[in-house]
Amino acid sequence: MKTLVFSATYNEAGNVQGLLRGIVAAVPEADILIVDDNSQDGTAQALRALQLPQLTLIERPGKMGLGTAHLLAFCHALHHGYDTLVTLDADGSHEPASIPALIGQIRAGHDFVIGSRFCPGGSLSYTGYRRFLSRNANLLARRLLRIPLTEFTTSFRAYRVSRMRAFSLGELYLDGYSYAMATVVACAQHRFRMTEVPIRFLDRGYGSSKIPSFEIFRGVHNLLRLALIRAVRPLPQAEDQPLNACPHCHTAYSWIAFNARARQPRGACVACGASA
Ligand SMILES: Nc1nc2c(ncn2[C@@H]2O[C@H](COP(=O)(O)OP(=O)(O)OP(=O)(O)O)[C@@H](O)[C@H]2O)c(=O)[nH]1
Ligand SMILES: [Mg+2]
Image (tube, rainbow, N blue to C red):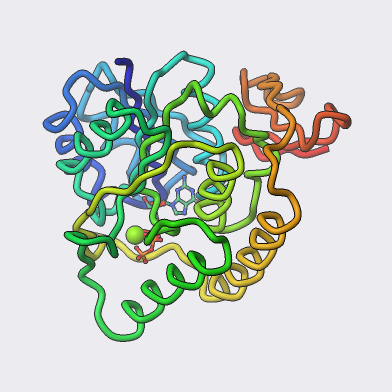
């Protein structure tokens, strides 16, 4: 089974070497993709210093957001014919040692597996307000989206890549950190076999959080939008996944069209950020 492990990085120089060593120890046969957004703290140099043959590093020109980095990983996995895509954060919150448990559920026949802090056996190191917020945001998402999971917001996941061909990538193009909920909704819309495995979620290692303070408002707004989509569009969307090269930077498979009827030029590039 061909596996790709992906992480997005923005100023994670203190964390990436530990992350990569952990991934190699957990899944030595997997390829690794990192999308770095021109980190100024030496993240890319720290990655290159490891000289790992299985590592592909895509460097984007500036901070383009976590959601578009994950979309680029989806496109990369589809374009290169991987069987399984695993995604996790680079800041030390997600333990690579849990990757085999996620892959195991794909092998067992699931199409989407999420690492959950809230299912039996899962844990998170947050206390106080952050713990309250994470717990209740996920409970609210479960209620409003009517999807029987305990976790929607973490990016520790595994996908069966062949099933991702059903995604309309444009529908996943949500701003901020909401891509995480949007992908769970897309999996449910397309009737993926979904499950979760318990994870231990730790506080980030080095560096600081990149979540903007207004993200909570954007998150609630996007959750309501997604709940509406679940309510009024219960059937899977038509396929809309052209995976074209960007007409501006010419990166292959990076141009996301927004719907099947309006292909180019209505779209955006997840590699250079151009839109038209
Ligand atoms: N390429 C890229 N990576 C990003 C961007 N924003 C965040 N990241 C990475 O995405 C991952 C999650 O970001 P965090 O800031 O840790 O956000 P979080 O885990 O939701 O929140 P915390 O609990 O505060 O850590 C980390 O690996 C970041 O380096 C971005 O704009 N571009
Ligand atoms: Mg984090």
